[in-house]
Length: 134
Image (cartoon, rainbow, N blue to C red; front, top):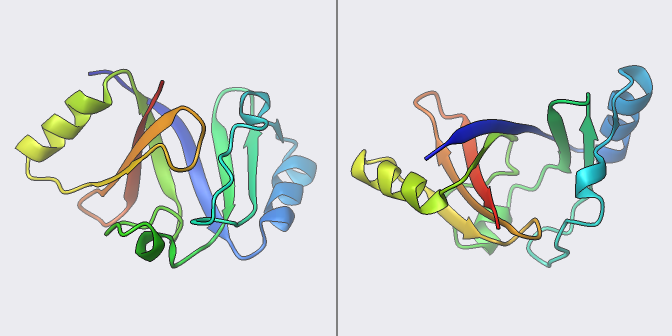
């Protein structure tokens, strides 16, 4: 199982303003690899923007306190944002978390085309995403 930092998700009440700030004040660029990759669904109709510094990605999302309820999941990745890692073996990650007693929310492929996502908490309550690109 290999984990590699992938992105930081920041939630706000005004994603277009966040996108403007990160691109026009900090000089980040639109992330070209994610254009059109978001799956439109009723579970999360909020705005999302994807920016990069050329190495790291930042996903800017409308805060939505009810995504977890609508998805019948105990963890809501759009409550306050999350840090994300990409893996080459999501099943091995799930097995490892289960063996170590770390509960996780299995979102499957609900948000991004071809990404299988799980979410869990670190000891301080920060939300962590691990996903595998199919």
